[in-house]
Length: 280
Image (cartoon, rainbow, N blue to C red; front, top):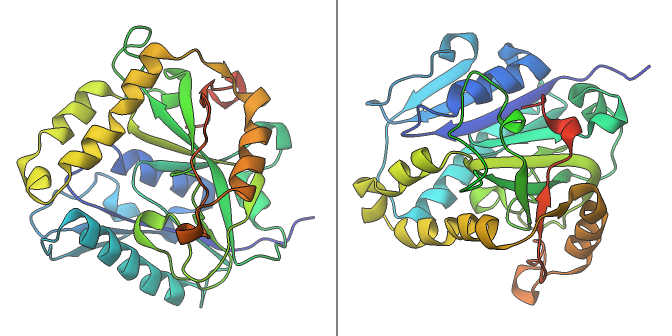
């Protein structure tokens, strides 16, 4: 019998009407809505429809460049997460378009899996960057699971993030690393990043003049390369690639970023296994 543990989830959101309610519903169903914490960045922002079910804090917006804004957001969430460990055993932190999943083959709930005893201060999930295939897939239907409508993802070092905090830690910008600590990639956890799950919505975001003015244009250009990968590369079966990717990410890192995985040097486009279809 696995000992029940209290698990909290925290994120911050601005200029979003697409992901927040799905994020709340997903993590609330796994861990209890009373354990979900969301900062809404800006007093002018519309609150998610499900805001009253969770711990939702609307805070004044401060305009920063993209890089500085990422740092400030990670600092705020890290500081608040440290207080959550006073009443929670595990704290998850991620962006609003990221969803942590346990492999269905484990036949265990995400909550029960995270309640196990781990020896590290954090866990990284294998990152899968999901995009709408330009020719094979239609616009997303928000009333249906994302993964029932999207079949392709790029295995990504950038989204192989230490989103699971097992002890009080300090995340770096974008939650891509834990400051001063190494990372441990769990063999059964996946982090699905859905920022490009719908081309029309992603394109609208990329035209936001406020974001462009604060330095997001190069970020959007780099991110949209995923659509070119989807067009031009042949996808391989995910299960044949996942173990290789975990080993590569665990062994390879740049000297100046020793606590983050290095990018893969080969085709990393995969077909998402069918068993994930109904999970998110």
